[in-house]
Length: 223
Ligand code: ADP
Ligand code: ZN
Image (tube, rainbow, N blue to C red; front, side, top):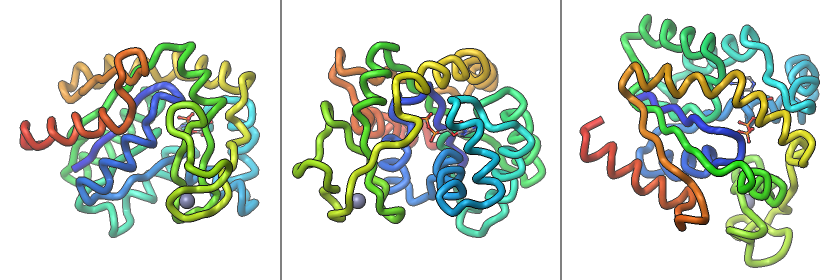
């Protein structure tokens, strides 16, 4: 099963994906996480990607597509995968379709998350992430704070803020989303595999609630 998480930054793609991963027993692959790991390790790819990520721009398609193509070869994702943050351009979506087709697979479900823009900015600047690479649990100082300030509830590691989670970078990330990524909503709508959900405190629906809805939808529709 191939599931894609689509949505602007800060809509909760990672949160929904990490819950679905446990429910469905298939791995979550986040291109953002892969880039951040390379940046931390100071690899050549990391140095290159950082130039784009720090400005809130997308990493070029050829680099990103190559990365995902290689990842799709690995044994742990042959039964299924939740792609979190890929594709983000029409070119990436087309290439993904080609890659999957060669393997006799297809995109089975696209979970499209939307959140009002003013909420997005607030969510992103108050986001904190567990620094333990094995854990990476996401918190929000307002909506979902840790029990003890600055410490992960699950593993006791220090919570950190992503470098690109600041007001300035968020604005250009949102621009990148609207210009380059939002056309994918129509792309997948045409394919007939789009599931859209609003994530917002105004309707009391957060990532964890949407994850429950998606899991039920998958079961009810035999996806
Ligand atoms: P968010 O969804 O909160 O923006 P991600 O962790 O998904 O966070 O991505 C962080 C950054 O990594 C993006 O702003 C972008 O620069 C880069 N990135 C991640 N995935 C892609 C992709 N599929 N194509 C191009 N750049 C990407
Ligand atoms: Zn943790």
